[in-house]
Length: 162
Image (cartoon, rainbow, N blue to C red):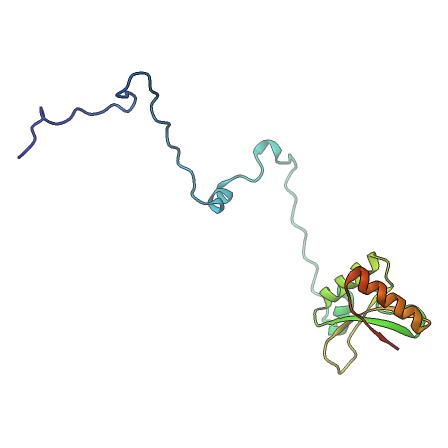
């Protein structure tokens, strides 16, 4: 049967509630569903926090230099890492890595902790292995004491070599 206009329910005003004294339901605001979406839409620096400096020109690229041999490029990549040990005949071989930046980082960490570490670059004609070494020590006993300290403090197992 068709419903007549008189039989249809009256439209409901959302501000008026059936029970007296109750508040209307809170308004629903649309928010992004994911954290990623909120991050993409958010301004990382509000206007009041943005620096008031004039835009600067980007630095101009230097002209390309002549191609250096790979050994020279590798040496230039880590200029702050020593590549030879101090005087003596005994040293500790700590590790050997194919990745020069990782090996140089290990040397820097050992130097920062007081070890006389250095990086030995691969020899010509050998596989590219960057050796992290500590020393050189005058006697084997000094090298053994350093190896024990390295094992205890840094958890590095090292080989004593001549």
